[in-house]
Amino acid sequence: MTPTVTSHRTRPPAQPASLRARRLPWYAAPAIAVAALALSVVIVYGTGIGGPVLVIVLGAVLYLVGLFAAANAVEGRRSARNRTWSALIHSAFVLAVLPLASVVWTLVSKGTERLDGDFFNTSMNNIGARDPNGGAYHAIVGTLEQVGIATLITVPLGILCAIYIVEYGRGKFAFAIRFFVDVMTGIPSIVTGLFVLAFWVLIVSPWFNDGRPSFSGFAAALALAVLMLPTIVRSTEEMLRLVPAPLREGAYALGVPKWKTILRVVLPTALPGIVTGVMLAIARAAGETAPVLLVAGGGAAINFNPFENNQSSLALFVYQQAGEASKYSPARAWTAALTLVALVLILTIAAKLLARRNRLSR
Amino acid sequence: MAKRVSASNVTAYYGGFKAIENINLTVEPKTVTALIGPSGCGKSTFLRSINRMHEVLPGARVEGSLTIDDQDIYDRDVDVTAVRRTIGMVFQRPNPFPTMSIFENVVAGLKLNGVRKKSILEDAAEKALRAANLWGEVKDRLAKPGAGLSGGQQQRLCIARTIAVEPQVVLMDEPCSALDPISTLAIEDLMFQLKDKFTIIIVTHNMQQAARVSDRTAFFSIEKTGDPGRLIEYDNTQKIFSNPSVKKTEDYITGRFG
Ligand SMILES: Nc1ncnc2c1ncn2[C@@H]1O[C@H](COP(=O)(O)OP(=O)(O)OP(=O)(O)O)[C@@H](O)[C@H]1O
Ligand SMILES: [Mg+2]
Image (cartoon, rainbow over the protein chains, first blue to last red):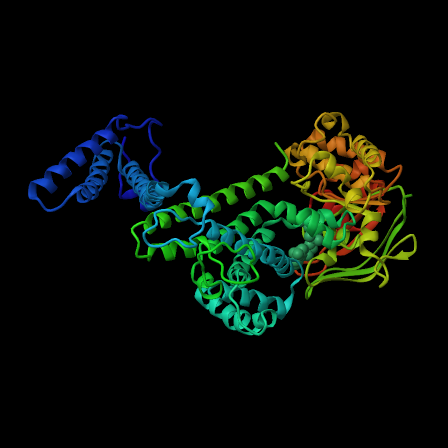
């Protein structure tokens, strides 16, 4: 018994006589896919209007139409809609993953060319356009120090700020802070770079440098900190708000003071989410080029001291190598990009494992 | 140990809304007192004002005076955390701390208030869990998460957590409303035992439960929606359930209203 299609909008569908329904055989969908693809090949190459990309796109459209028609004929309208939408959702997923997979593939295939000991042990000091070796040691040091300092500054500050907003903030002041954090989220990184350049490099740093302004890794860390802070505050705030009020009340009812409740009950409960937010901020900061270029200046030599003289970073290294007039530099740029992604990935995994270790095993 | 709680002219507000008005009642030490009444009449509000949990909500405040053994808990120089340690509270829905193990949950009150010594904590945990009728079920899995217990076990865990800090008054807000009859009986038995040491005030919608466990019963009610809740009648449980002096009470307990 097939329920009529038009009537169900006006009155409830009649009770089906049986709970069983006719289904397409399992091989129907793959068969339709193959047929659609074959038809598409014939059409595209027969008329000579396009290449393989058009074949796939046309094939997908034909598959959707064919699937809908087949399901509609055998299983009825509702089931046909269901099949079409599932197919659409799956294709959306594939479309979303394709660029990601392609990025990873390109990175790995091009980045492994210079993935050698030399790359991680040498800097670009005294490396000319004709030298095939040279490495990113100085850039790795720069990235680790700058992002490390920025994290040390922003994590405590950001979490405290979020705690204030969620647990203590009342009225206009808290509202103003939230508003400014929102505004800060939208500041372009080049602007934070300019801000640190104008404020730290040009005005403050001369005091430490016999009156001359100086680039430094620390200035870059400051710029990155300005970028990271709003992300950390917002994500921590969301996580703290997710902690149910009965948990807090449970602790209060035991006579636990508010600050201790926050420290020992609320924060641990929200920790995994907070860690995720912090890692997102770190990942974003590690990929920033403009502020580092503006206030740390870049440089070819290894400089361990973040408080004096030029420093480079991996992102900046990629930028500079990609624009270098040497046939060896593109390979260095790819390897540095791969290193950067791997570094962020390792940090993220490590942080998640740490956060998980604090939780109880079920 | 147990203390007398007495309220005089207690009025509580949520912002501009007056939830209860002029509540006067005295709860004797080592008794179980049941608060009954229709939904929204302010039982929870009154209960929460006894251990100063009411003021946790923004804009909420309490007027009048509440004393335990002649000490006004709303005095300016009273330490709120001390009040809450003296007057413990069990909530309607079990709320074990999700990041803590069963053991840590039970001793949370002690640990977070500065008790460090392991032997003391272990003794306290065993004592509280035994008192809450939970020891047998969890003694082999103390290191497992508290959130992994069944609902009834979680509620008894929360009771253990509350009595581990050795309060003198225990407030319970519908502690059995999410529990099966067996866990409910276990908790009622528990109240009988706890009565030896604590003063217990319990909110319940279950008339039989109120009749079974309590020595005295207070009936709260509201005139109509939006009016503040008032104490209608407060007497020995026996009297309330057999021969109430106010018509409204009789209507309520016989199911004719509310
Ligand atoms: N957080 C709150 N903010 C504003 N009003 C509240 C809040 N909590 C309770 N109220 C109001 O206060 C009045 C009393 O509520 P209360 O929770 O004390 O009732 P109750 O007797 O415990 O009801 P129930 O039996 O359903 O638990 C109700 O009108 C309720 O709407
Ligand atoms: Mg209530």
